Length: 533
Image (tube, rainbow, N blue to C red; front, side, top):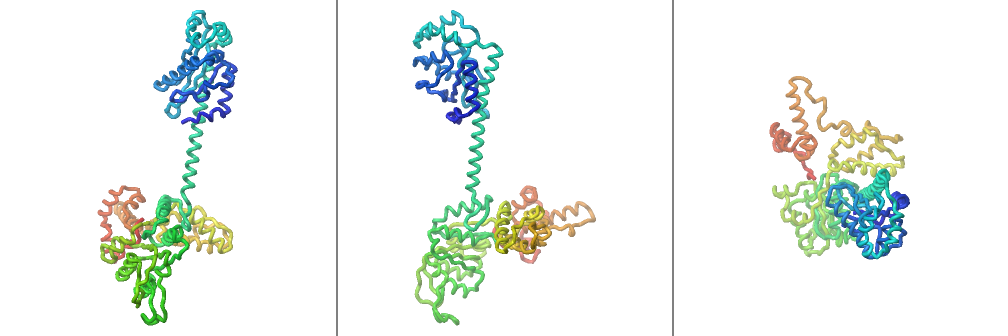
């Protein structure tokens, strides 16, 4: 909708109104799409009008109603028809008004109503026809004749110029409305951009997958539910666990972390639940477990997929009952702990295989957060590089460094199987190796990144024999390596290769590259331990 109140502040429109008033004694009115007058309140007029006939109409309520009826009828004609503008006869029956529509992108928003002008001198018969109107509005015939004598008669060339000026007013309104709309869209876009956070605690990322993670974290920060964080190694699962804790009501209580794969079963039992003196060799005194240390706070169990079945039973009891039994103890101890878990394994498949308890799986997976791998959020790489570079250069007291264009290209091409941790280590390595150079060239990149080419090197390509066989060999190799790289995610690989998913499946069958056959041929290593995000 047009902001009609703002039009009175537009210099060009005000200037055009002045020109039309001074040169043609014409008044300009804005009418919205519903037929309402927008720039003047005829019941409370303080403006000094130039048009003599309009001043006569204003002297009575009937005259004002006749004028408003004329503007509304003009508006309806333009709204319902295809005309761009109209020439209509005014309330007195001989004077003319020119009406130009305001149309934005095919939508009718109102019109500019210019009142009034004469095409010819007013004849005595025209004046007689107006007698009825004069009586209705209470105007004396002598005053009417004086007003007519003051009114200009426009020649054909003057009318043409007059019409162009009125059209120009309408065009300026359209331009103003369009510019305001664009400005509002830009402001909205900027507000949306501001709403898309580049950081959430220690996490960094503006990509859509990370925005989804941030949004989910906002929703669950006041929750007490258990959370399962899934993602490949190096994606930042512990950072998410910390974000959950430090944005929760438990933020002032302890945040305790344990890596379940770092201990054997007996040590993990003691580490989590504690032990009493004399419960085993070396237990010279009572020890609180991590559950008790995290009381009223949060315990983060990383790599929970590596926990043994017997330990899973004990963990399930603590989660359900809020009580634990220390190693060698006889009395249970109550604890109030929120448990967060993380894994890079497919726990659902482990449940099906019987290596992970189904009841525990559903107990820890009340809320699921999947952390996207870096290859699926490559637009975050510049942010991460800047963060690691600024921090690394500051720690080493060296000037801030930048990457050469070719180095950036290589970094983008690389799939980053080690994810953010691998990128962080690479940036630190480059800061050291670049010495006093402020620009890091592609030659300094690690060999795996510098020489990466999608898993296929030209040295291994067939350069003799039939072209058809060589092309099929290349195609098979690219698909095989791509399946390994994407953890058998056919949809993503098809997108990378620029073919349809159905076409990729046909080629996988053609070359015998289904997952089981490839795993069997490679000695049982599927290389697919990470959760596909």
